[in-house]
Length: 187
Image (cartoon, rainbow, N blue to C red; front, side, top):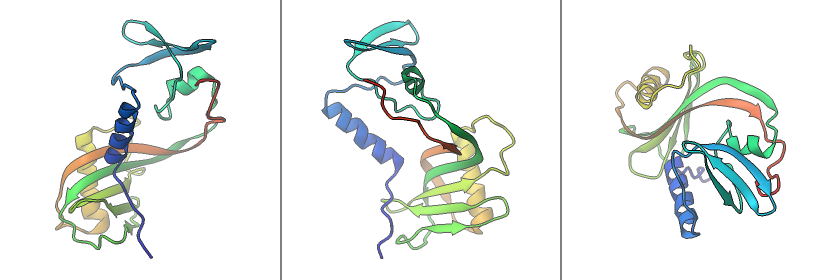
């Protein structure tokens, strides 16, 4: 049996950006969508900052759980907000575990998983930090990496493993929600 193919989020996003660029699209980072309304000509978007207005043929929401696009389209997001909090880090490490499989550890402070990623020393570490989270604020990248390093040592007992540079970090909550539909006209 072959192990699952795991690809870093960094690589997935880079491939999507390249394809979008190849198709003539343009990503405008740091641009806030204030509102969007549909008419016969397309979708009129109002962008934050200067209240700039543009008409586009289509508006696609790739903006996550707090999607301004979904709200503007009137698409519901029923369900229950998550209470479990997880940290994720794609890290360079000297861990010498078998790269043809994934690892998981169950611990009183929460589970931890390690997945090999393409690249010599790259591993994805996911740690449940629900017990440790005493705030609703998001941790910084440095705080995430520090917590992941502690989890590798404490939960997996890998005290001699060096967790080095992070290629990508994130934190997320598991919610039980789903958009009630995935399209509303041109949005």
